[in-house]
Image (cartoon, rainbow, N blue to C red; front, side, top):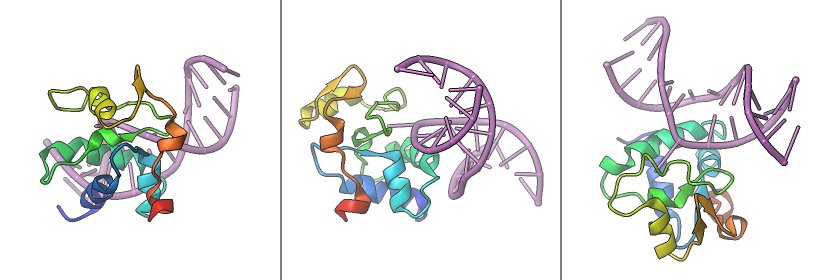
Length: 107
DNA sequence: ACAGTGACTACAT
DNA sequence: AATGTAGCCACTG
C-alpha cells in the first residue's frame, strides 16, 4: 500500500519515544485536516504492515486512548506508553499537552 | 459503480 | 459542563 495509509504509518513511525500525537494532527500534516477518521482506520490496518507501527503513540485530541480495544498485542496500549515514559491513568494521557508531538510543527 | 463504515472533530443544544 | 448531531474522506464488499 503506497497511499494514504502508508503516509499515516510513516508519520506515526516518526513519533519520538515518550511522545504522542493525535489523529487530527496527522490528518492535517497529510493535507486533509478533516480526514482524522481515515487516520484511525489506517491505524486499524497498522497491525498487519511491516515494519510495525507504534500505534500506541496515537491518541485522540484529548489524549484519550480511544483505540485501546482495537489494539492487538500482549501488552496493553497503556502499558506500552507507560514503558516509554508516558504517564497514563485510566485511558487518559497525563500531561498530554506537554508531550504532544505535532508533525506539522516538529517537521 | 454505489452505499456503508469508522482508532475523529467541531459545532450546536 | 455535558450530550447530541452532523460533516468528513479513503477503503471495502
